Length: 229
Image (cartoon, rainbow, N blue to C red; front, top):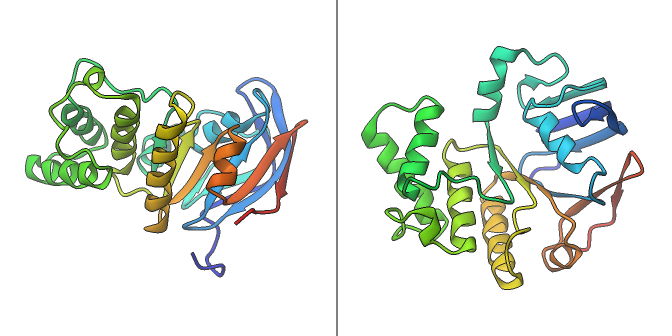
């Protein structure tokens, strides 16, 4: 990661809402390409609201924000699908379609973001499945996989469109300790290849084990604490 690079994500004097009321005041935060950043804080502190602002779900109450070429301050409805195609999103509960194989889940995601060529889709699916260590599980239904494997499939889905940024909202929250470490190792490997990651978590043990930049959200404010790297 180059410290000279322009910010990939930037909030300036931004008031973050949960869709109704302001939960974070005067957020000033810049994240550069290739950074790994934790957002941590108590439940309800506004961590997920920041993520939802980045995906265009929550409008800003004040200030400015942008992600890449997208001005989140004046985001138009027709821009939101393009914004979301530029992001990879990983959820705590995986959000896989349970009646379709993993391969079919990934093909559905590609089709939903405008891919049409069957050969190109098959090639891309194979590539991301190998990247997350699931190349022999493409035909499985989600319920036939362990929780860790389902999260790997969700990470594969997040990688499909070569995003510059992955938003991971409590991605280890439903996993046991050993599996959580494996998923963190995978996320850090993806990050080392150049993809920026913003991860929401309250798991301090994982933060100590996988040190990176840490942003704490508390009492409606944001502060950065010293990296343990």
